[in-house]
Length: 370
Image 1 (cartoon, helix red, strand yellow):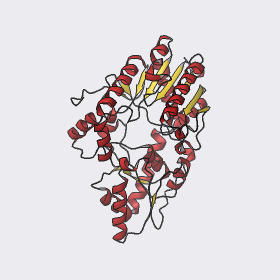
Image 2: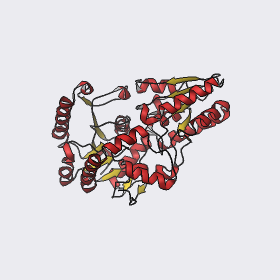
Image 3: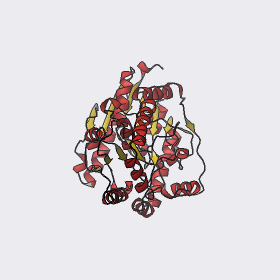
């Protein structure tokens, strides 16, 4: 099969704009692509979709929202099943409830790719066990840990049911070692595409450094520790501007990152989130998760591994040393250009679809905590 023969459906769940950027890159390679999303929040601002189903779904109550999801799933299955030969899904969601379309797609020899991104398959007990073996103190915020423990049994059953369907019927699985303890099938890792054409690179230090933090969920990202560190540093006489971005569209976040010097990502993580990647592309020095052994990445991130214990020291060091900020900003941009270029990512997907091969393949490790 040639890329011009590919008729790809991407959606309907969208996380971190991966689908929209990937679809555009695949189209530029000659593939026929339809990208669909359910709802469209501030993070999708500026992203291009062929169809946005139920754009105001977040305003509905739980019952109406469930009905709308069922309608959207059914609509996508009926409309795109006959015309597409490849389906790329995200977050464990497919076109029918309980992934019932996966065996149908397999019977009709459709290629299906499921991309996991973290919370969709992460299980706190397995993560806790992995972190303990690695000697890592911080792997999840206490707020999230409390929620996970409260809902652990039903959530684990739901995830295992979803994984059973995905592992049995999906053609390929994309994931990363840091959250793949529940997987039993070999899987591949492909980096998320980042449209750097929409991110202005600026590595000129400001006379008064600008520190940026944009949490999607403050309790889970360590925002309280970050704010306390900035307040302590200001009390000690350090001159800098702290911008805490709440409810800001992704387009505005990217603009502000290009004005900044330091970006603080999440403090409870093994690796970088999309905010950290966009911050690197902007030329910021980045503080956040970076445990290379568990990231599944080909090269170590130019990110200073930061947690609640060392956020004050790391932020202080960057404020005092503009040369370190500059070098990290340069390396960050180079890293994103090398590993997150949408064209290269599109080539990886096409190769996986056409040949079944990928640069990085992982084999699951049995975790005694499961």
